Image 1 (cartoon, rainbow, N blue to C red):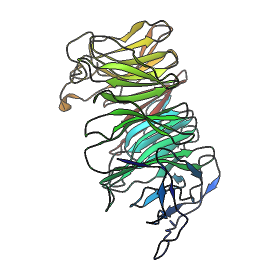
Image 2 (tube, helix red, strand yellow):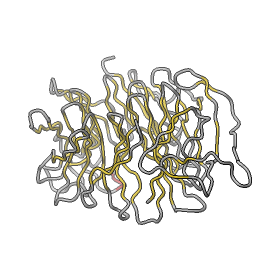
Image 3 (cartoon, rainbow, N blue to C red):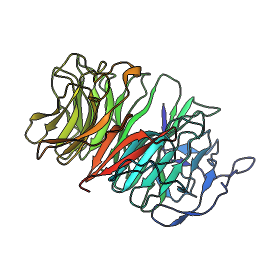
Length: 423
């Protein structure tokens, strides 16, 4: 695996310099400024181009080529404003907030939702939606039948995603880590990674905190997973931890990066302190714990201490949280059903619950029909069922008085919906 962050070249190619200008309308970006759209080829000279390893940031508007992965055409778009209808009605305090395509992965921050799409005829694309104004933009369009835009996250007004291609020549896979600043409308290319063979593991579990991107990948073998970070300030790529093949499901908040560790007989929740570089076992229990998320001094996860099974055989899983200040672990929900995908903000914990499914402990794919979103207020102990539709409401996120989830949108795909609490 070769890491290349800023390709430097001021020379013209021997035959000619090729620049493709993508034709399109000038549109307003998310902060109201005008922006243009360019498609460019990297300006690489075979004799004088050099590589700065591990770091290098080139900020600029959408028309600045910046450091691009060699051997392939990559695109940097100005945000493309999209038109959409009113969406699917989901209740008095609920509304659909994404419309462009079927959601694959998503994240929320402030008034914004970001997501990537599943691999469809339109490719794997990166999107940004404002839940207040109802506007939605396509940040980047990935090619059809290619990896395209996969992982995505947002924090402090900066959207980060992974853009991947199979080039026609050179290494079998190239991944570019790219960001978009909502306030400045600046696109930045952080790191370009060339995978020289298939005996590797690509970027997974991208998340951001403290001007840092955290994720897993490996240059050792296919199936291995090590913890890496990239600084959003200077583009520094660093390997932080490599514990066998067991680092999955990375999440980040504050000073800590969390992951599910699969090396022990049971799966545990471990943390890496970005300041002290200390690694701790947070869950530290003989049963399986996984899918941790952190808010403030609390870490919530999926727990299997109350029944047989575990990470690879979920069945009757429960939701627990751990207080980093007191060192105490508390139950959130131990209903006799499958609970999954927890998230928390302050005293509010939300999760995906299957107690109303025909089989509340589904195992096989044909048994998953009806999941709902539940919420518990830790300050009062009250548990509330937030959704009660016929199909599956999944992957909840809570931020302030807003709860987000994925649901079928009535058009053959799925979108992100938002419930405003207290209305």
